[in-house]
Image (cartoon, rainbow, N blue to C red):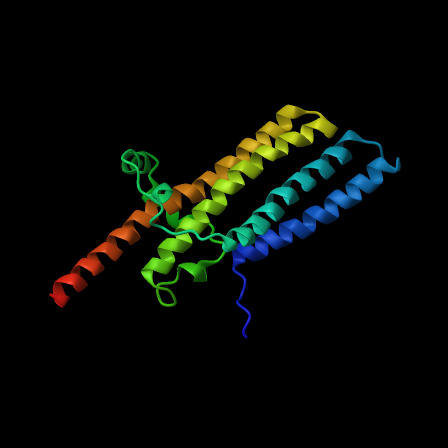
Length: 192
């Protein structure tokens, strides 16, 4: 069995996690041992911990949702009436290609059917909706460390980060679904 090569985005996430764990561990060890009792060191550790938490849980949930039976025909994934206008306002077409992709091979038309790609898009959207909820949990870190507003800022930033991926999936999937439907219609006409 051949191993799939990790994308640049995946490698970046793993590097951030490794660096975050190291920085948080050193910062907390120095601060809580009393070696260096400076607030900057504590907040460096907290920031590294929070960033690591966000990335790590996103990877975990991306693997957990592989167990779900996500299908692009589920009503949740249907295009809503307001969406095309919203995406035009947000100019999604101009920036959607610049958005990072954790596993670009999963969207390859050479290796997957359009139905598989539409399902992958639905799974990716599900992942990012779950990430939106995960982002809210960082507010709980204010309980031991205080400074609620700092965790609120990181929560909002993380939610905005995930929102771009939801928007891209919801922008692209209806296009793929329309192509699937046109192919089905042509096949039905040929079969008659």
